[in-house]
Amino acid sequence: MSPDTLDAPGTATSGAMTGAVPAPAEQAHDPRARLRKHKALVYSLRVLVLVGVLAFWEFSVRLWLDPFFYSQPSLIWKKLVTWFTDGTAQGPIWEQISVTLQEAVYGFLIGAVAGVVLGILLGRARLLAEVLSPFIQAANAVPRIVLAAIFIIWFGLGMESKIATATVLVFFPVFFNAFQGAREVDRNLVDNARILGAGRLQVLRSIVVPSATSWILASLHTAFGFALIGAIVGEFAGSTKGIGLLISTGLAAFDSAAIYGGMVISTVLALIAELLLGYLERRLLKWRPPSQIETVAV
Image (cartoon, rainbow, N blue to C red; front, side, top):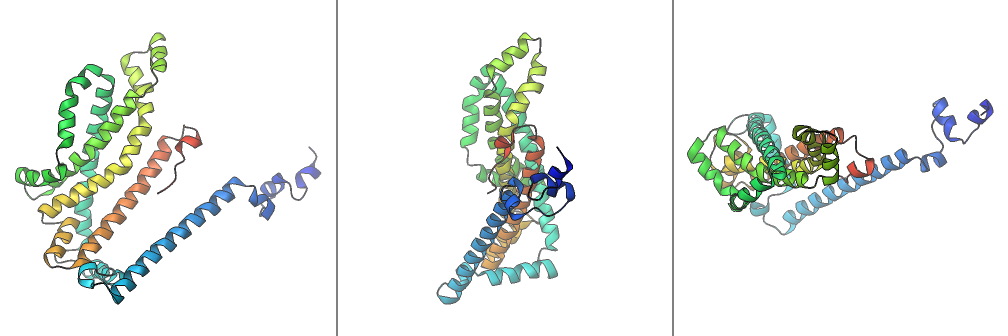
């Protein structure tokens, strides 16, 4: 290829080699440019939807709804500004967020690790799974939110009872996904590995765990939300710190703006956790084909 060909205007290589801005025709066929354009469109539409919902809510309350029951975005914003500038009646808002986050993270880690270990173990031990199956189903049928009151009796009003509630909420979705992921491993692949001399531990480490990773990570996306719910429900049932206490105090004072403010903070925390888990998933599944790891962000 001659230098004239490389420097010819309109070719795909000329812009990349010279650092010049690609022509519009080149951008139209550039997958990255099209992806950036699509993302910009999606984010713009999301902002429009959010603004539309908030505007409808604000004007509905001003025109015909009772703000005592429904509050309104401007009042919620004022409550949040007050919390972050002057603090809450229970102390600085950052202290409340920190307590709830610690409870959720500890519960998430304990529940996720226990769910992954037991899920993979029972997924590979058929007899043990058949024996324990009715007990696990019975435990899963227990209304776990109610357990928050039991844990307060057991562990008191401190952080331990909230961690226990979050752990119970996280365990089951992670367990069932890890169990199914371990069951879905290609049997021919396992048989071939054993024929080649791989032991049980090697099969588990090299085939079973990587195959179940996508199942486990899929469950973790919802698991942290459950951990946050568990922490807040535990605080709502009885605590001295946390976002759940702010919501409970707002309910006792019939302050709907405080209740919505606590919901906004917990939602933001869940979205941040979702971004971090999405980043972790992309890093761990980098070895898989793009078509299998690319998901639509919700």
